[in-house]
Amino acid sequence: MGIETSCDETAIGIVESSLNAQLSLKIRANVLATQIPLHAPYFGVVPELASRAHLEKINGVLRRALEQSGLNLDPSRLAGRLDAISYTRGPGLKGALLVGEQAARALALALGKPALGIHHLEAHLAAVLFEHPDVRPPFVGLVVSGGHTDLICVSRWGSYRVLGRTLDDACGEAFDKFAKMLKLGYPGGPIVDRMAQSGDPGAVAFPRPYLENSWSFSFSGLKTSALYRIRDHGVPKSKGALNDLAASYQEAICDTLLFKTKKALRSLRLDTVVAAGGVAANTRLRGMFREAAVREGWKVYFPSPSLCTDNGAMVAALGALRIASRARLDDGFVDPSLPFSRW
Ligand code: KG4
Ligand code: ZN
Image (cartoon, rainbow, N blue to C red):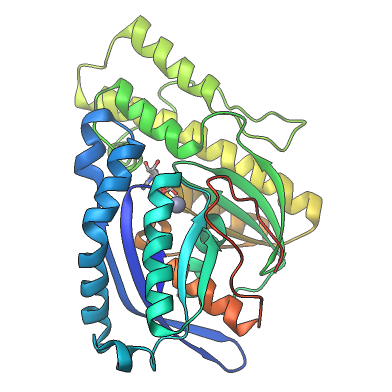
């Protein structure tokens, strides 16, 4: 079982794993109670509201996940079917993480099973294994979400070297804040994605924050240039012009992510990329990476869009991976800025 409460989704997944030549994972349940309507009026996540909503939702989500999986709700029988309870240990919002951790530890204690603290970004990457069980490190990992833009060298599952991350806004935040400027709604990423599909990505010349001599990302300058554009030209009146603006802004983000990823592939002499996290659900990002991969002879793998955004199944997947690797299972309490660690 995997419990995810790091941000604004209360999510529990149950995954069945079998280990033959390779680990194969099947989702038995993946239940989510979203807090989007709660945070939408603020165009961003309000931590205190998030923690309280997790507390209100978590028991119901657990009941639904057990029902969906077909597992018996009777604790004495349940103990025979679950190997471990994984939960997101960090990074994330502290009060939100604590709710998932407490639920996981209570359940683990009641069932006599281990509780496994999971790294949220590792879990995003592990989500790729549901549909691509054959993906094997070494690969370049790109985790792009509302809180992170991390480019990682994954030499094996459990061994990570962060090449670069954002110096300011995460790329998901760059989408969300752009949508906020235009009062399009929250979260902005999926809205901009939809609008951009009918827009011209070359209509507005936004800068590409490539930071050529560094592995770091920076999206705050791009965001400011959108702000100035809207200040100087006003909010586009026609739907077409608004779609063009969205497509141009999105293109600048996707170009930047692809530029840095290609640089990592070249410099590490690798030929495989795994892209995950909420922004990896983006239609243009997926298309652009796939086209580049075919053109340049490398491979790119994404989880399906619904498994890119936060979910409980990915947390369970990483738990299963750690059990299969016979890694140490319990490793401390929640940490809002949990670094990658070796296992
Ligand atoms: O991974 P995630 O669900 O939560 C975090 O760990 O942050 O990512 C949420 C982020 C939000 O910023 C959201 O706008 C963005 O992912 N996102 C997208 C798309 N779907 C979600 N961004 C661009 N295009 C999308 N289709
Ligand atoms: Zn996430």
